[in-house]
Amino acid sequence: MSEQQTGRLYGVGLGPGDPSLMTVRAVEVIAQADVVAYHSARHGRSIARSIAERHLRPDHIEERLVYPVTTESTDHPGGYRGAMEEFYTEAAARLAAHLDAGRTVAVLAEGDPLFYGSYMHMHKRLADRYPTEVVPGVTSVSAAAARLGVPLVEGEEVLTVLPGTLPEEELTARLATADAAAVMKLGRTFPTVRRALERSGRLADARYVERATMGTERTAPLAEVDPESVPYFSMAVLPSRVDAPRGGSGPGEVVVVGLGPAGPLWLTPEARAELSAADDLVGYTTYLDRVPVRPGQPRHASDNKVEAVRAEFALDLARRGRRVAVVSSGDPGVFAMATAVLEAASEDPYREVPVRIVPGMTAAHAAAARAGAPLGHDYAVVSLSDRLKPWEVIAERLRAAAAADLVLALYNPGSRSRVWQVGKARELLLEHRAPDTPVVLGRDIGGPAERVRIVRLADLDPAEVDMRTILLVGSSQTRTVRRGDGTEIVWTPRRYPEG
Image (tube, rainbow, N blue to C red; front, side):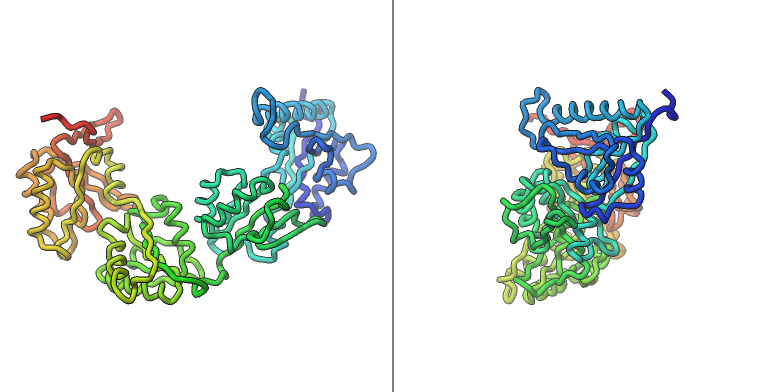
């Protein structure tokens, strides 16, 4: 059948509930339609129909698409999903019969048809077979923000929209990292959503909106809402944080946050949440530059060689009621800021200041993953910097680890002022390792200048190593293999030979 002989399908967004928020185009489409279809529960009442009712004509053919189930409890052999798939297939067939007869079909949808709407299931089954137009509508999220009278997102903020049906752990993680958020589909999910907001530290900011723009609309601080009173058509809203007050309202604390080796792809959800929630950020300038700027969140940058001063500064801020995030590259407990903060926090006047450590991806693990699996068996981690410990101690530890046949991860191998340590370490290791022992050189892992190479220990050139490089020196069991695509990988077997 040619396209000209069929009817036209419309997905019509009606807006959030107030009929006056329907668009002119939505009204036009309903007026010219032969068939008006809408979804409803078994009780037969349809919110979509009630919104559009004033525009329905007596000669409209009405197709009521009644859900077989509204919860996941069903005796259908395919379960809830099977029951719904069968329903959508049958509903699409009913609409197709009208379209094949040349009738124009308007499927009504609350909010926007393609935003968590039932219309999309008709669209996916029919839009490739019939001429189709989707008429957008005002979403419930936009309506909720308007009724609350607060900015939803501003500037560089990101809006996260979540279904309340997600598992609690997933909701908690996503809410903790969100700038602003809307959680849809509450009703029976409300207790789970409330716990997730509380666990993520966002409950105090959360607002509740029920049936936005309808006659029974209700708004309130979410923490004050009775779970038994919450219908499906309600949502939780976390509005913009730009103008939210920060600091001074409760006890302060210091959270030392691991940023991972490079940019945002290496940042854990927990770390992202702590950075977002902090009143102040403290850290080495280069690392602070990796954290997105947030209006109203002071950033206190300093040089890389003043860890103790930086730690005391952060603790002083916390004593004044500020929630302070001290940023650290990689993992803060591996040659980084966690030790400096805890050392200062163990002395007066900072003993009572709460301190937490949030882990991050280490440089060693990041480089190892890029190269293959060189850390697949026992390994030792040693810093080659002699700024805080004598070289004699470093040399003794290198000999001991090499004699024990441990893979070595060597941090801080060189800098402008330290140029000889890599060569000396190579000499010490060659006393116990074969010249062809694989060494991974990982530079700027995750960054724009990332480079990973595998060389023989005997060929390790100190001139090619700087402070942004980490070295992974294999054991006697570490192997290099050239894969079928030409790439070279390095790995250390998990099984060690007996004897």
